[in-house]
Every structure is written in C-alpha cells, then in structure tokens.
Length: 365
Image (cartoon, rainbow, N blue to C red; front, side, top):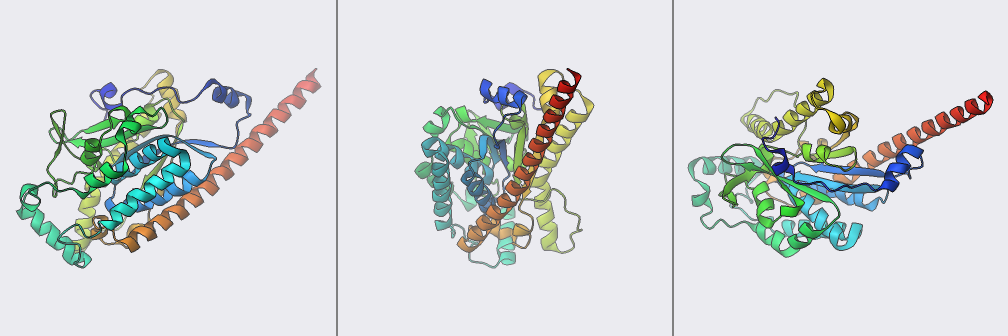
C-alpha cells in the first residue's frame, strides 16, 4: 500500500555516500566493508534479541550503519542506537543500548499481572482489557518507558546529528495508516506513540493527531530505507516469524496467532508491495534501478522466542532478556560470517574477471 503523501511520511534524505565511495564502486577498489540500513521489528521485551544483534554488529568495524528504522520496541532500540552513536561512536551506541535495557529490566515488575504464570497472566490481561478502558486501568497514564527515554536519550542531539538517518513508525488512530517520524522531528512523544498499546495506554497526541503502536501499520518500516539515498542493502531484524505453517488448536495458540496477524501482516504487505514494484516495473527512473538492485536480508529470532509465553513480551524479566540478548549476538555472528564470505567470493570473482580482460586486451594488442 503506497502512502498518500510520501514526502510528508519520509522527510528529506541527505546524500549518504561521497564521491570517493562512488569511485571505489566503479574501480573495484572497495574495502571489505558492508554499508547497511537496519529495520527493527517490534515485539515488546523480546526486543532484547535485537539489542544483542545490534551489540554484535557495532563490534564489527567492517559494518557501517547508515540508517535505521523501527516500530514499538524496535523504535526504542533504534533511537538508543542513533543517540549513542552520535554521542561517542560505536562504543557510545553499545553503552547507550546497555543503559536503556538495564533500566528496562529494573522495571520488570510494572504491572498487576507480572507475578502470575504466563497463561494466567494473559487470561487476566485479556479479561481486564475487554472490560476496562485504558482510562480505567491506568487513569494517570503512567508509562515507565517515558522515564527511560527522558533519562537516557538526548532528543536534541538525535535531531541535530548529521550521521545516521532514523525513521520511527506509529499508527494514525483515525486512518490506520503508518506515520513515519524522521530523525529531524524525533521526540520522546514520537517513540512513545510507536510503542503505545491501545489496551493499556491512551493514544499519544502529536500535532493534533492521535497515534497507537506502529506495529499495527509498519513493522518494521522498509520503504523509507529503500527510497532513501543510503546504501542499497537493508538488514531486517525480525522478532516474529514471516510464516506460521502450523494450525493453532488451543485457546492459547489461537490467541497467539491473532496477535501475530495484527503485528506480522504489515511486514508481509510491505514485502509484497516491494516485490511487485521490483517485478512489474511500475516505477521509473533512478528509483526503479535502485529498487531492483536493493538487497534485503533478515535475521530472525526464530527458536530464541518460539518457546516463550506471550507474557514475556510485556514483562522484561532479567533472565529472559539476557538470554535473548545472547541469542541475538549469536544470530548476528552467523549473519556476519555468511555475509562477508559472500563478499570475499564476489571480490575474487571480480578480480579474476578483471585479470582475464587484461590478458585478452594484451593479446589483442
């Protein structure tokens, strides 16, 4: 589904690659680095898996992150990454993510359902949210995440940095469409809007519009990264599977599948739209060329979250969070190994092709 007002949605995109990078591309002298966009999916406390992925990617100086997008928990990870990087580079980004997640873990006993077993907690939550509105369950609109943002994120620095681009998705309550907040308009309200679960919180109002969780409409945002002037490669970190082949049978499984429909289908629709645009050629000019060449890869949480109950997305238990972080680091390590192996193969192939051409030219002369 194409946005109605694309310029309003994605904002401006300053050029990300200097002339030197262009010359390296055509001369085949590029260093062994990979320039990436990152798209970070939401999933509550399961976003600790994404924390681990980012932590490992930031360790590797061969990886250059040009832009990042996120929804819900992905938005928290994204804004912490950008702010930390603007403050003190890779080390600053890792330290900022670490500080944010330790603060989140310290608030693991937020809710009335936190001490209940998983199934009981979700039943209690479902019943309570069907009977009571957020104004009744949470009359003072208390949101512990607001305190985390205020304490750890310098939004003025985020808006002023000339480094990574940042895109955060929220869902317009009136239309159901995605609203993408760019780095230049980033604020605590924008991030809280992206993570606003309507069962627990009243909508977040920004410039007269009401917003709910971005996971309902763009989870994670891909189009702003592909449309931008950054690198032609995007890595999406997914907390929910793209396909669920099993047929749910129990009430618990049915509830989990309905939740997956709500938060997983925006990605499926966006991927389908990208594939149609790549194959049908409905776009013209440079963007069509960029879109067809764009590389999209995935790191998926998969088995790391498969056995976890639904309540673990809402309650950031320290043991679960730390286990997910380590799983994310391992998944990123596997991706890096495969990605740079492919880079080496392509580099050798290009070098051999160049050598054969040189030999052929000398013989012809």
